[in-house]
Length: 275
Image (cartoon, rainbow, N blue to C red; front, top):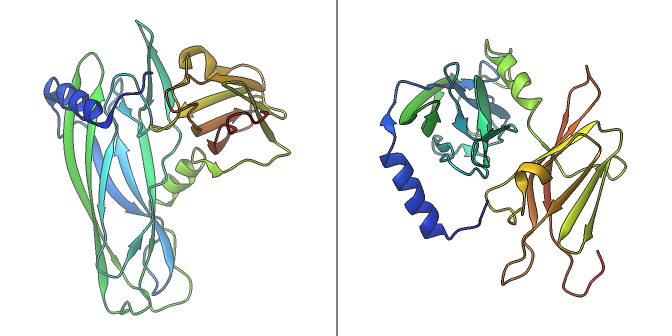
């Protein structure tokens, strides 16, 4: 996974998209809400739900060797505040030739937190729009674009109302959405030269999914996955030094216990400092 310039990345994406067939109807896109209504001044969560046909996959917004990442453009009414999308952890896909991608298959929901304005009128409603661009691949790749909209009523106040018919999608998504930072009692990290060593307490395995702006891993196919509670990520030094380690860490548990996902953003030690 070599780091390339922004211009080169854009050019590579254009080449990839030009070589894909058009598949606007391949991936089903819906905009859903966890609750049936909005509350003035209250927060709720909307979800961009994508369904990918069996055998196909799309690409996470982090780092991959081949596919272009999903792109979301979310539009909220005036006065509504939309937070940064919260992306569930992807899956690793290793292909012939040492190609490592981070993908979604089946169904995935990206969560977008929304805060309604205090002066939202109970007799009113709010319409949200999301445009999604994707590349989906199987034996061939198809590029597609679709949009979805959702209109929600404004409740008179109090609780956010009853859960919607899509509330379970949010429960499922949160199982793979990372928590910010790690509990020092559960996860330790230290630098050894240009390597970051991660150790998870009571973990049966660790998997690291690098963000698009993570420092370049020397051997992500082998270094970013371990069947023990220890992971050593070797970072390739550049002219400006060692890049930070940014992405999602999956801490696998024993059989029957769900994995824990943690968002990492760990800076290397300053030159001359001990790791």
